[in-house]
Length: 386
Image (cartoon, rainbow, N blue to C red; front, side, top):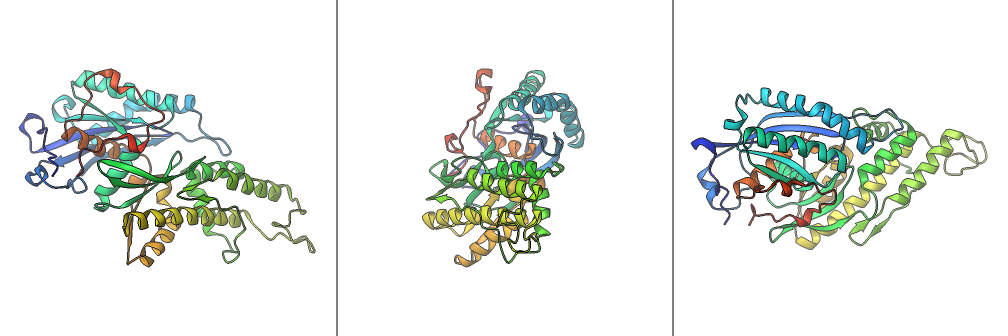
């Protein structure tokens, strides 16, 4: 049994309030959440059903011109410029008048992520903690995604597919750890899609992956996929070779290289493949690989429930393909959230951090707040689950 009420709420209240700060990549998120103080949380395994109330969820994105990615230095400058304003806006929306009295804990992303942006946000978290005399909790970014997904969907013990710009992992819980069953061997799926978007020079607003998804929907040759490498190695997968190959196809398409047999009919010289077809084929290929390794993990742990988290988890086609697989496996089910919670945000950090806080896991020395660019999911001791 797990007692989520080890630390009572501040000032004798019947609820907890947490402030979450996220800035591991180009999204700067600040969120405020509330957990009710419930007696049934003193015994059982109810970390997926905390009755969370989202008081505010503010986000600002650093967007670069088409064809460009975001550099750590420039992203950190964006976070420094906007952090105070976003925190103020989140507190006003949450109707927090005195943070020192109203907030139980400040939660920040400790890692993984880009070093400079992480540092910008942790400095803001330390400053707020010292100003308001509120304890700090450092949160693993991936665990934040998982706990927010479990809370929103009420999926108690799913196999988790974590797909984002920096991470691609298949995860299952066992003995107080989120165990990684499979992962990318090189680049993450979000990074793969983003880099292909740069090759196509399509806008980065609202996000490159979303714009590729919209182009893929316009493909007129969905019955004849462009053949791309398919690289699954046991429980792991590789995407760098796929990206290199589809990049070559796209560049040949833009140059009008009619010697390319994949793109042009060698007899008539007519174009057979469009940019939309390349986007659709890339998506289908990558998502099929993800579905395969996820199904293998489900078989290993004897589960029929999948939770998709991370920014790429917003993709409707990925959800459809995973749903088809789950239904074929003993009437399984796939859980996912919308862009408010899939894409990096502050409330997911607040959710995971508040669970840690309620179990007594808080920062006792500011040396513990040093960020970790490489902070693996399975390094976290999950004390709030049986």
